[in-house]
Image 1: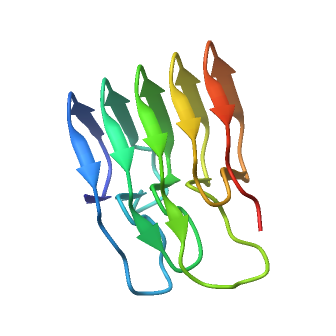
Image 2: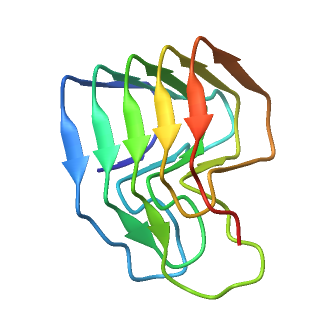
Length: 130
């Protein structure tokens, strides 16, 4: 799923599984980029699973360049497919993120953040950082 623009996007009760991005961009499962500088867009992922996706360098499950909210969801089994020295994880953040009551586990490189990350009632476990 790619969202490039402004405004809000909600993914609700969905499974994003087995996707691969072959370019240098990230976001094997979901990629969000805000175009223009007037305001940040946002994405909410609720009661969903982001599983088994791959990207060469960053954000194998999700790459976000805006406000990201993950609620009651699972991010698992996402992998970085290159041997790059600094992989940017299953969730690559370039904007603020709130993750609540979610599980992030079994990913190759869990998270990378250049922004504020708030975790509430969530589990982050079993990942491998290269």
